[in-house]
Image (cartoon, rainbow over all chains, first blue to last red; front, side):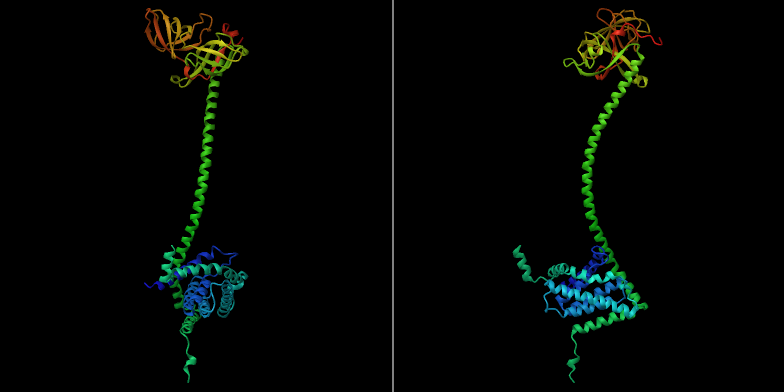
Length: 173
Length: 290
């Protein structure tokens, strides 16, 4: 099987699993970082808009299936964020903490506003946003982004070593 | 017409497609097909969630188990120390209980005797000959005199553990607060005795090594195994009627006398507390209900 396909299948499932399990473990007053949004942003910056929108679509669909939000809304928002951030590919350095924080915070707010818009549009009343704590999620997500980006960089490098890098690693050991 | 203006990138095309699908899902979310699609996807995704959740729980429980193991180890250590101290306490308690029992039995014996008595504790034995003498913690200050008879108690297993008393010896040496008692098994010890069943009289003599014999019995004397042996009162040292033991084996001495080996009422090997008959009343027994 192609190494790239293995990487994406594992990444998609691990990302989803992390979102499900960690959300109940690292929450503060019921607010937890949106790990899938962070991952979508990371892979969009790394891989471009196609990678970003595809991963965003799949993770958004998974989120829609498992959550009580408007079905399709998260899928829509993740896809559009993936597409938008994907255009920053090669234009910003995703390893810079400032760049990470700005992009993640803006996209988190955009994501939240998008969901609010769709809920208002389709449901009439944005029920999910009655809890004021929901608006703390962009802050928490932004705070968590340096650690998660570090982890994702390591994870990405694990599957994308060039033969030269592997040889070098072998010599260094 | 320049169609290049309307040309869109691959990324945009995919994005439009995906957004269209997402919009359709939102619009048709209540239709049966979308609901079925959602159910189907949930059916395939839910095991991932439950498996991951289980894995996380297991990982959490490893930490808990480890901390439980550490605390169990500490508890085990603590409990071992407690068990050790408790076993020491228990041994001490058992020793005290035994002592209490012996003292009670001694008290019973004391009340059954018509003499003034003084209880004493054995604190030592003759280092040269274990069965020859014992040291007790009563002396001149307690009104003890030389040749005072000394008794002790024991359980008779044949009589369902009934407490029986018996003469064990006499005071040989006396100090201010301790005395040396010559045991009945010492070869220097001899006591005038009688057999209450037949009235036959003789002399109980120590043979050393806890062996005691009844000597100088008439060859035609009527003695039998298990006959009780009591002090006769002859000789003046021991008052009459004090129990000593029972006939164990009947023999004949080289001089032609009948002799018998005795089974003492009290085992001389494990004496702890004894009763001393005081000299003031050793000759004249107290009269009950005077």
